[in-house]
Image (cartoon, rainbow, N blue to C red; front, side, top):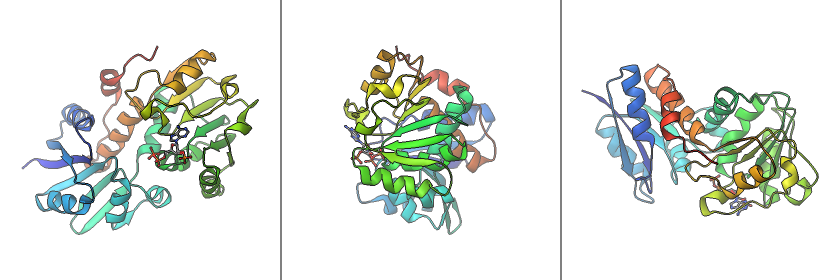
Length: 273
Ligand code: ATR
């Protein structure tokens, strides 16, 4: 019988994960089935119980269930413990293992696909919500010269910076204090682009920036990317590569073989300018 995997979220119709994992399975010759589950709000545990009872082996987790997935797990990786959120589960008898590959996917995309390693760079991350929490440790593992976390609600940026303080040079900032400062790499980890908004980031942050990265994907030239482009940033990217890389990490975790992401990235990439 084919082993079963799925992505669970609400809404779920938009998810590219079945297409991505279908391509990975074909490329690596893995005999598996990957479907979509629309979990009822408040019904995450019941939906996962039913999936496991039917023989399900692993899940990807998307909005709004990443915190529920963390709570459901019996064993959590350090990244999940830190972020409080899981984006992948693996079922092994009674054990439920939780992982969060979002940040690793981001770092792999930036360092390998976009050839922009973070080591020794000044990195600015906008946002201190779930996406930023997931990215924190993997970014600091790259040993940037400095990571600055800017957020509208300053306290959340402070809290996140203090979590990362053991791992590297990281500090928090409000948006206004960024005026006159410039960074090598600027990441938008806020959810502003999902509703067509621009975080109140001063254009000066892009003055010597070589890569502006939008973690959201499929939104085209978002207000953030447009500002970066208009300020002269040469390389712009959205989260398509991050999506493909986190999927490849989950696939490797479940199946023991890491697929090449190039074909998936090529298929999903939409030119930004
Ligand atoms: P996600 O899981 O996508 O990270 P989240 O945990 O709700 O979602 O976090 C959303 C992040 O985007 C937060 O950092 C939020 O800033 P606040 O903490 O100050 O609310 C940020 N955000 C959302 N809309 C924004 C906007 N228009 N401008 C700036 N930051 C915004």
